[in-house]
Image (cartoon, rainbow, N blue to C red; front, side):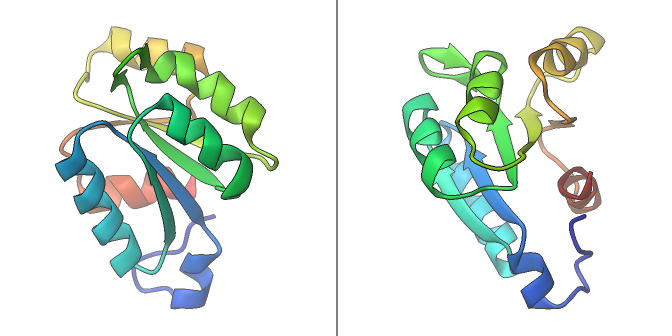
Length: 129
């Protein structure tokens, strides 16, 4: 379970977050936000980087953009889960908020679906499961 914003920093640091997004501004702002809340964060700009981190970073949660260059988050999700040495919670992070997009995310193995821009309470709930 992910701690609330009021939780102790040590508890938040136990949740390791892999952010995957090709939009540098989104990636960096999410990284700054989560680190400010005390989470340990790794970033990836594409599927190759994400898969590299999946094997070495030990993420407990991956927040994955659906529209990635060369692939989609839908295609990347099962590969991330397979590459992760530990159980991995997958969160789709997308501009697509339709019922079809939600169904595709579920079919790809995502545990949660967030639509950009996301409210902090929704983000924390998705991290918590």
